[in-house]
Image (cartoon, helix red, strand yellow):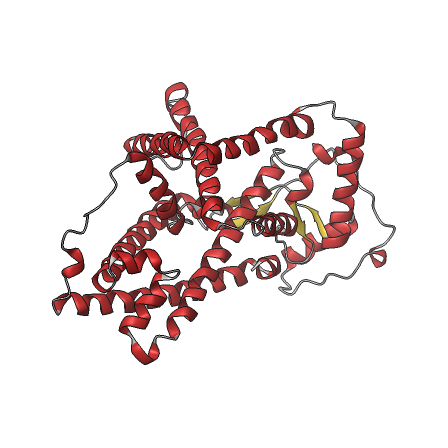
Length: 384
């Protein structure tokens, strides 16, 4: 998925669309199969459905973690706003339509699962959809694992696309090392951010229990979400007249904040060690941020090291700093190149590897030539 995303954004979007079709198709098959069993009188699993339920709120909170993990990706659209045409018009529509469809399909899918499977089978199954297919689809049940793999691949592709853009924009704004905002000289994709995202993902594979990883990730993500939504209230109070291209009803952030408090406090009661470990990991980022980003007079050894990282990142990945750009009605308008950057310019473009543009349009060719003339960039203004 990282390779696809480094080649072309259009490739990643086409893969996402294709895998989404497969995912929705298999979910519709599951829903229709469950509906058939339901109308033919298989309703016994809904009798006393909440029997033996543990009503302890701490268990509810951790259960929400695993449920929200299944919905992960609902916020990915916010991270790729630069790739959306006319975001002011299309973002609210996309969020409303997609969330409505996803919630409806997921609820109907769970109804189908509970129609066929009892609670013991649900809890003991490592892949509920596969177990469902084995009990209902007979000879064609073998296709379910294929569609489950397509669904997983689609989720992975979408999160790769969104997470890399988050890192890319953070680096461009100076909140992360600048080399993470470099784009491929030919494909114009954030290759360094994509490689960094893939590297972090591979480190996470080292865990032996994915459930523990979900708890760590969910708590940390929920805490950051609370901090982000807190800024919403700050700006609404301190800057009520500020221009807002997209304005939401204040009730939604309030509900999000209340639920976020619940999902942050109660898991700490039930699983304090996991919460403490998450807080320690978050706390370690503070001195790193202070020394590497916030502090103006950074240690010279650190500056030299990161300059080297930036230099070799450009050589290894054929990446260059992005020009200042903006989006207007979905079209990129190239503005004045970022000032104050000292560059090492080759004497001729023949000293630079050839990077012909597949698209062949004039704007891309012109931009590619400018990139070639300033490749590789190596300067002490890496942190600026």
